[in-house]
Image (cartoon, rainbow, N blue to C red; front, top):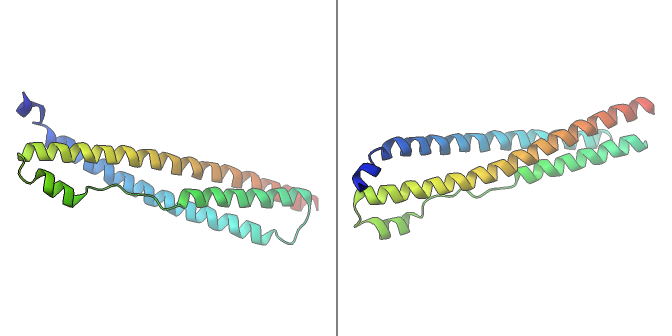
Length: 146
């Protein structure tokens, strides 16, 4: 029964590896977007600093808030990996299938943790984009009025 339950371990391991690689790519893309949003928010704040209209000030504050959300998304994250020393000490004498199965289970846990972190990062990015859009609209209206 145990041998039959791990016959497809290579298929599962390949999918876990592909999923973790896709997560890393998504993390990198999100970090790039956070940097762009942070740059736009900073530029908007700097370029609108000379105007004092009420709507412009609201837009400027929105840009600051959007920048803070982008910065929160950009915050360094932990990337979970196997503790190689512990793995060696605990599994060196184990059957290869047993060791591989436990390694695979650990990688799945790491991927699940990374998924939660990525979801928070993406939520902050979306929030930053929405706030920045409102801020830009407020600035456009504010400049048109003054």
